[in-house]
Amino acid sequence: MKSSYEGYRVLLVHAHPDDETINNGATMALYAELGASVTLITCTRGEEGEVLVPDLSHLASSAEDKLGDHRITELADAMKALGIKDHRFLAQGEKLYRDSGMMGTEQNNRPDVFWQADLEEASDYLVSVIDEIKPHILITYDEIGGYGHPDHIQAHRVAMRASEKANWQIQKIYWNTMPKSVLAESMAKMKEIGSDFFGAESVEDLPFAKDDQFVTTLIDGNSHVDRKMAAMKAHLTQIALDGPFFALSNNLGLQVWGHEYYTLVRGNKSEPFDEAGRETDIFAGVKI
Image (cartoon, rainbow, N blue to C red; front, top):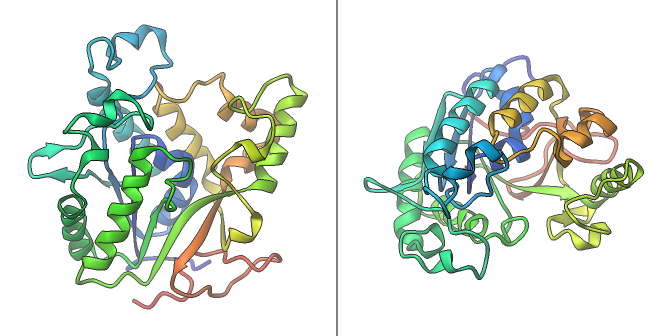
């Protein structure tokens, strides 16, 4: 990798607070420290998330419905841990989009949720961001949003539509991915210690598990995984310290979170490559 990425710019589009840290935390921290401009757009405040901290259960949408405001603070703390200064929420004028909840739930039918957003209106805001910051790289989800959550699917649609409409041409677009081989190793280790892996018996039960051939790019962020773990801890209501995420760190080592995987869907793979032929730098081949 280069010693400095001054002048290089990347935009990430995520559905809820915490998605960015789980998927891209090490990548974000690595490039930010090397001088790249990193911008995060979060599409909702995650109002429908499950509250994992008993003392904060009153924040849930089924109680006082104040989780969204709390998660704004969690996201700000996570971004501070990662060293990211430019993070914004997707908005329609003054209004923020609300978390849609899981597919098929009653929340999906609310007119203010992201799933019900007009694609052109929602993407117009993102177009304005793209034309403002002029990113060389866009990172978001695949067409099923990784695992089928309506807000993840909508984030994909909005990001891709905005990339088509913007005057600024983004040189490379990546979708987050997780290879089956890595997940299989994680599941085996979890079973050894008597713990399940999100209730799945095999990688075939995980909708976000992709064949390894889809991985075009691997970013080794092990040098910044401590920042990622600090950011994960900042998302206190969503990521349990005694849950599977941190159990994986304890039993597989921090590398399980330091390696982040991508599928390149616009632009060309460029050197340097690793022994498996995967890119090792998302900015490889980018012209500034």
